[in-house]
Image 1 (cartoon, helix red, strand yellow):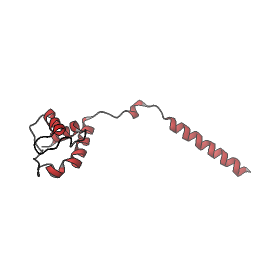
Image 2 (cartoon, one colour; image 1 turned 135 degrees about the vertical axis):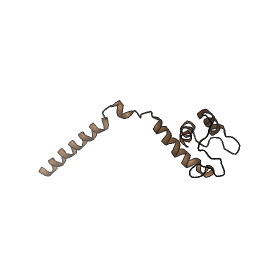
Image 3 (cartoon, helix red, strand yellow; image 1 turned 120 degrees about the horizontal axis):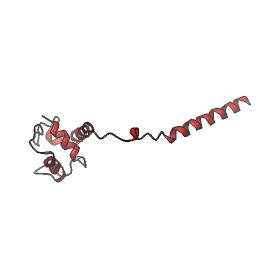
Image 4 (cartoon, helix red, strand yellow; image 1 turned 180 degrees about the vertical axis):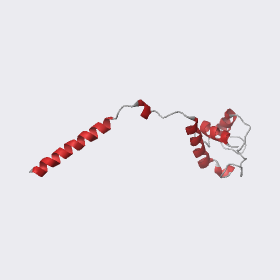
Length: 109
């Protein structure tokens, strides 16, 4: 009989802990993702490695497509090319991450 009571106490305690954990603390600082240029560049690098290396080479120094290091284009011009394409460059290759990819490309020297 004591074992059954012990199991009920353990189960009730576990449910209480689970219920409190599910409520969360409501801490806004933990919920909000910081908006930093480092995160944007990292996202751009990830997208570029997945989408651009096929034409621009593994290090983006050129392949079928041109070298992307040291471009003299503005961020707006790069975003426009990523969105609309240009020459053999297809439109939409950055899949909605055009600004992040442009930020990353502009870090390449």
